[in-house]
Amino acid sequence: MHMLEEETLVKVKEDLYFHRSAVDSLKNKLVSYLKANTEITTPQFKEMTRVSRKYTIPLIEYFDSIKVTIRVGDVRRLREG
Image (tube, rainbow, N blue to C red):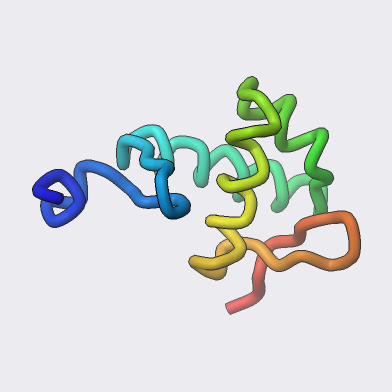
């Protein structure tokens, strides 16, 4: 897919893509939140993103997969290093 090659789109899961600028903006908000609050739950992340659970779960798992966050039980924390 051309837009993936140009990195305009980010593949979050098999059939789910988001615009790079939206993902980067959300990543910045998430990192800022975690620096201030140490951890975030899925419902808190859902509130932050203002999207349905259908998109919240794949997005938070995407941030785990690119090593921004790490899942510890029911919360996510900022990954060290």
